[in-house]
Image (tube, rainbow, N blue to C red):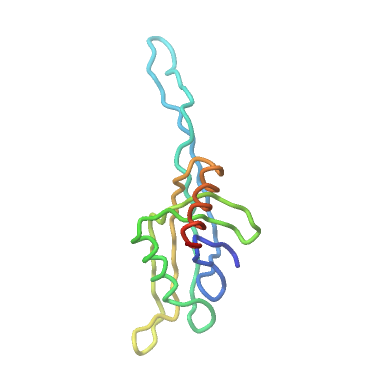
Length: 143
């Protein structure tokens, strides 16, 4: 397992990503001042975005259906916990965008090569909030 988004597992048999990019921002709005540079004030965290890029070669590794599963997850509008295979917890994330490029086709039109880019956006504020959400979800599953 490379990473899990909710119950979806990124691996060689599903969707192996070759690149993980993370962009984190912090907000420092400015206020204009007469005769001086604008004053800036730190007001908190900004957006946190992860972009996973990869390649699916259905003859060798990965499946087309894996991208359909990610689309269904995105359609739900829910936030999902993102956990790395090492055990690192990233927090709760929504699927913001999924881009797919199909090339090198078989006679029936099925692609031999599928490149994908998945954009995730963090929606929780802290690990404490994540643990509460996970405990609530576990409680619902056990009922």
